[in-house]
Length: 150
Image 1 (cartoon, rainbow, N blue to C red):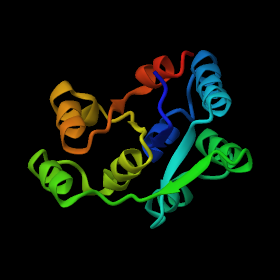
Image 2: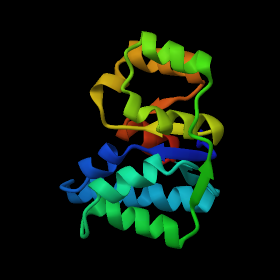
Image 3: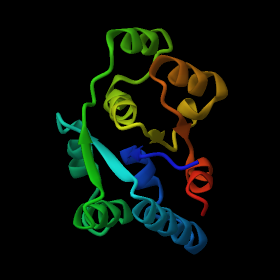
Image 4: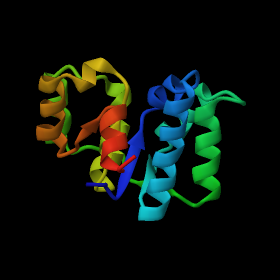
């Protein structure tokens, strides 16, 4: 099941910079699958996510090239990155990193999924807490690839 959009954590993009050729192929195939399905990279109106991309994705990095590609292909969708107070309170209780919340807000607003490489977010209990609090599925790399059929 693919989603309408994906909030790609900057760490996930950085983490693929030194990926092997097979993984690189799968990342690029996933981006192409998004394009062919009409899925977008979800960004917040406030610019938090794009700010993280600008600060952390250096020229020449794969993540920067992916961002440039989806921008040129008009695969970016700006949505609200704000969470409801109820969602924010639930994430506080789960000790969720505040800097990652705009990704969840964008995924929630854009009927999408949050894609991350951070093990702490991929643990079953943390992932379930996020799903319950925000209604957002949390996908690791393999789940992202599977979601898009690559």
